[in-house]
Amino acid sequence: MLLVKHKIAPSKIGGLGLFADEFIKKDTIIWKNNTDSELIISEEQKSGLSDYMQKVFSFHGYFDKKQKVWKLPLDNSRFMNHNNPSNTFVDESGNSVAFSDILLDEEITCNYAEFDGSERGFVY
Image (cartoon, rainbow, N blue to C red; front, top):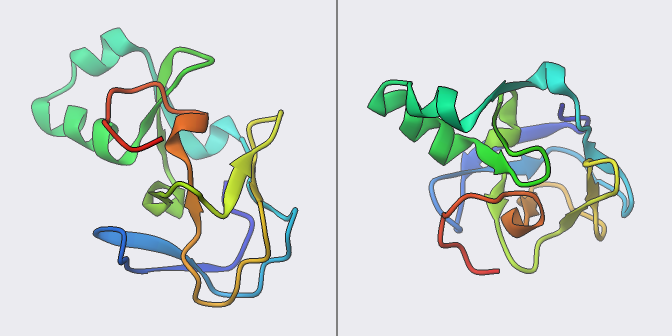
């Protein structure tokens, strides 16, 4: 679940992105790992979905490589784009934490490779 003030806006990385709507200090937890804010399904359940919903999970969701399940964020964290280097990291509890200060209007990014085991083809 997102814990910081944010907004969704066009991204230079691609499509829409998640942007800080406040100054975020280094080491601030931006997103807390909380199963109430994600739809969680197995690979088998995903394969039984319509083509459209499979694409939604593949585009806005991720395959949790530790738990071996698909997760679809139900909050705006689904707009967090991949970047390497990113300005967040995943801590031992699975939370997204600011790697550095994040300025007002700066895009909040993450490195998908830290948690996503899908075959997206992003640059690690």
